[in-house]
Image (cartoon, rainbow, N blue to C red; front, side, top):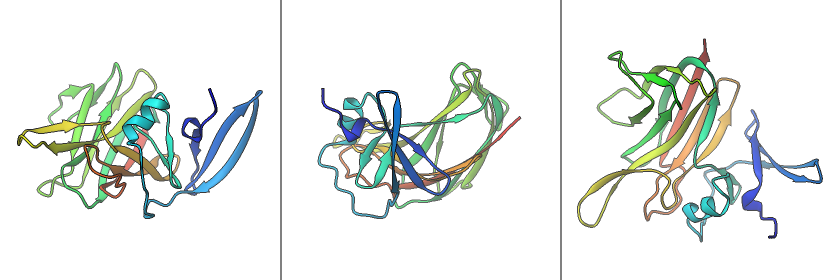
Length: 198
């Protein structure tokens, strides 16, 4: 099977560039690319299909590296979600502490927590987390209104994906596109994740 740029692994750097990594015979070759989520990105094939073909690995769309999900390295700590922008409603972020917990404001704990951007609630929320697996998983979520009038909460469908637009040792910003039948729109939700390890 021929090598494809869709299956390239990526490492985002702190200055917003992306290092594309291909492994050939044990040697690493790299190419630098600048992310620009404001460009007009045309996806002829849905991201869902591209992620299926890449076995869930990040894919390249235009100049952007698009992921289905991301992970934050931590065992225990505090995570803060900040909704900093976006032009679509009914968007959110799911956190998963595999085999661990995320503590809610009422003291209850859950392995998976959905946080929705809501104009009637603060744009920032923090959670204490415990992740025995060593990483906290995250991905964008969205609500879809179907032709029948039924509303579902979905993830990883159609052109859903996340572009990390900036990153640092304890903070990342993501531009998120909803799924469904909509076109790829990484400006649907802009969310910042900050964490402190205990």
